Each structure stands twice: as C-alpha cells, then as structure tokens.
Amino acid sequence: MTVALWATAAALVAVSLQGQVTAQVVDAAATTWWRPRLGYKFQYQLKMAFDVKRDFIPGVQARQRGASTWPGRRGAEIGREPPPPAEWVYLIDGFEATNADVAVILSKGFFPICYFSAGSYEDWRPDKGLFQASDYGSKLSGWAGEFWLDVRSANVKVIMTARMKMCKAKGFVGIDPDNVDAFANPSGFPLTAADQLAYNKWLAATAHGLGLAVGLKNDVGQIQDLVGDFDYFVNE
Image 1 (cartoon, rainbow, N blue to C red):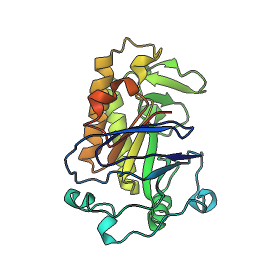
Image 2 (spheres, rainbow, N blue to C red):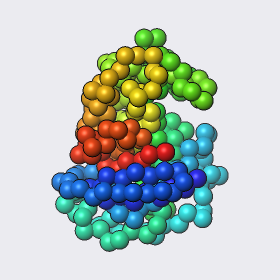
Image 3 (cartoon, rainbow, N blue to C red):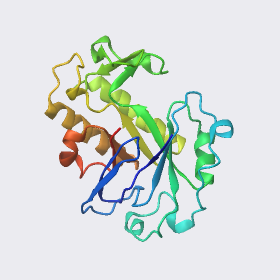
Image 4 (cartoon, rainbow, N blue to C red):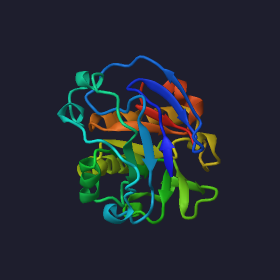
C-alpha cells in the first residue's frame, strides 16, 4: 500500500490510509537528523520476510539525490533542500530488513524508515524473551499473538532502546514506532494520558539522541502536546 504523507520539518500532519490528508504547519528549530518535508510520500511495505530484491516495488520511483540532500547532513542545510520528487520515504519492518536491504533502498534514492511496535509484545519477535511477564497485558483486538505493553516499565524502555539502536545500525534514517496509544485502549494496565505522554516523549528523545527521525502513529488526542517532539504524524 502507498500512503501519501505531506510533511515539513515542522508540520503537524494527519494521514489516513484512504489518502485523506490534513496539515498544520508550525515552527521548529533545525535539527541534526533527517526530517521529511512537504511533498514527501510514504511507501508502507510491512511484508514479513521482506527481501528487497524480491519485494521492492519498482513502480515507486525516486530521483537520485545529490550530496546536499543525503541523510546525515547538518541540520541547517535541511531547509535548503530542493523540492523533492514523489515517493522518497520507504517504511519496512526493522526486524525483517537486513543491512543490505536498507543500503539498496538508500541507493535507489529513498529514505528508509524502520517500523517496529513500541507499544505491544509480539510473540514472534526475536527479542520476545527479554520481556517480563509483568510487561504485557491484554491482547490487541484483531492481532494474534500481540499484547499491549506497560509503557511505565523500565524494562520495556531498555528493550525499545535496543530496537532503536538496531534500526540505527542497519542504516535507517528514522523510525516508525507503532501502538503508542495504549492508554486509550483496554491494555490491562491502569495507564493514564500522562503515562503515555511521558513514554512517547521518551521515545522521541531517545530516537533523536541516536540521530533518527521519529513519527507518531495514531495517538491523535495527544498531538498538540507532542508536535514539538515528533518529526511526522500518521493517523490510520
């Protein structure tokens, strides 16, 4: 599926999977990590066992970037990028992608984003044994083998930090942490809006500390409180 995301380095954006887009632009300081800009489109491809040679969609095209638009440049240069072509941002599963997959996506002129769940325990992930029984609660409705996490848990933060470091090591330029609205769902924990806000701010700060962009998935009720922390916002 292809999702168009209209964003700037300082945009409050809501995007639906049906293509409905609304945006409110706000001011933000320059950063030292990559951030999406107005006109970027997001290609979500979360197929399990993703193989870039087999699964990369050739119909989603991007122009080659010059040195001035390559990830890792200084933050002050970000605002001087030329208007981008269409599909530049490619989101894939962080666990399934290899370093080689990410390198190929970069070589094709795309910005690769690392998807993982930051708010749920998934019983098929390789790091599932690191979670404590007290870390996960109720099942996510409609998703087999997936349970809400207690975002107050220090152990959960240790695991999520390791996941973000994995994304960085594989060469991704940003992360797309999913399920960060447990407080608004029957999670099995007495989570408050303040608990969720603190966790989401922690996620953003940790990602930025690693030089990664970070997006807010859903949690639309807290966007106004998080617009200064996240680089893009997606609402399914």
